[in-house]
Length: 305
Image 1 (tube, rainbow, N blue to C red):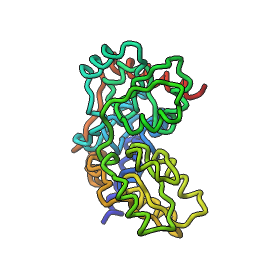
Image 2 (tube, one colour):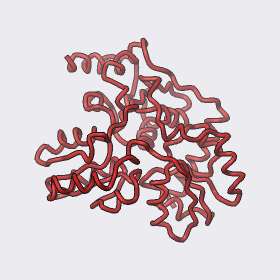
Image 3 (cartoon, rainbow, N blue to C red):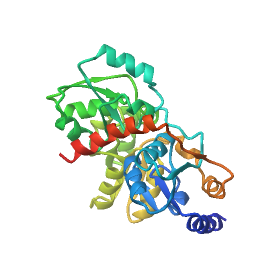
């Protein structure tokens, strides 16, 4: 029974002084055993403040790396080593170095969904919710935004005073959603508000009633007086909101809005990682950690400005 596994996890994380983080895209049985649930950077900040000496990130590799960047003194565990992020892995340091040579007068802004190594070559990180504010607060007028061109294009419309250069990259799960699918979902559920992630293409976000990060989408749905919603982000959010707001109706924009990397981690993997029979401890070279932290520190400085 799932409940038996969850009870064993609760016992082990207490015995072994482990804080469990779960990204919103994880399955609900994992969310139920987590100490904190949320978006990637917010979870890393929670990990840094947690008293536990060990942190388990139920998400993907770049998220676990971010935890290690902010909490070098802690053991950071990733329960499923194969859980990566196609967007984070689209660029490597050599490719970015070539782009910097091509655009030497551009400041490099990295979406948080990038590897620690790549962040060392960037000027500042951003999250989907903080990007516009941070870019507005930058001294640079010319920006090279990596890697998500859809998010970058959405931000560029909010910051027209900046010249923002985009590259052809992004989240394959969000990017494949089409305008036709939105129109079909709206026709099937005409009373529903359409909430979407800015990693989707422009003609999809243009049809939205609300555009925001995963956490912002969930908060909007919870606080709205509306009773039905089409959810334009990973389909696990449909399940989570349906459980948390059982008086409302939530519909997936597409049955294909599934992040297979997020789905790799199961409740059994969490247990096995706690038992020490599976998973991986994240290690970062100190030079890489400090270089990536500089990029994140600049995000916090500009974001608080």
